[in-house]
Image (cartoon, rainbow, N blue to C red; front, side, top):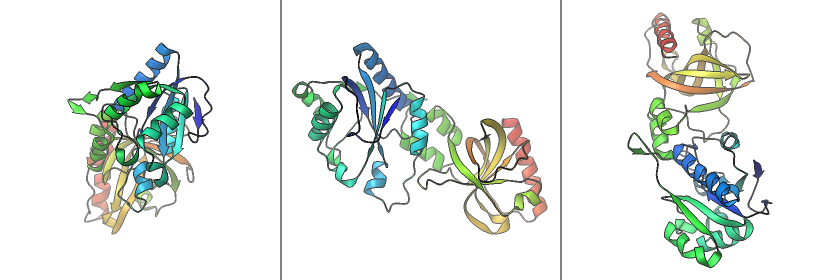
Length: 307
């Protein structure tokens, strides 16, 4: 897969089949579109091209909105695309100026003229261009004029629910990581750097790795205690994770602390991956440290059984 940092940097010379979108989460609905892209590329002897954007359009248009949260960082998205077997990934900078591009200019001057598009793959609800004025009907009206064909991919359903990035985000906001995994097609994860904490877990016999996620737009699931898996130097371990504050110690916030089972190495300043399996309880304040320790013992037994 070749990566291009803008449409202007695209250097493909053959005719292409193109799909475009933000693809946050790369869930099965997205993969249905990518499968159609690859199949059309194979059948028509074209090069497959995915056009996506960074930052996410909502972040570019509403930079002061701290409520915008995403399922994937740009690095995670690139990692996922590398596994999908496409020829080209274009990551175009999304700006307010770019958002004003008319749908005709978008099709004619960018997709057809610059990217050599002869076939376009879109989802059933795709809209594009200034104020999202470009609809599938608009696209169809431009086919003959600019010499390309369009394929429309229908929505994918999981348990009779149309899959969407919004529905997955809502599940995670509610702490329903198991439901989110069903919709995503894989377990939700995050990546962070291990930093020094206050060592309270160690005093209780449950040392934790405190994690900082550098991308402020990465979605953190609802506060609670989770069963998780942790990848350290390409080796997976089981564990349990506290997302949120520590009310027993009168500490609020959205901290991330993970206790890793059967592990005692020094991983300060290392970057680790955490995969969410299940939320097992909410966070609450305990009357004593002994009560907290007893709860952690129960949490560990339950987590090991789930794992």
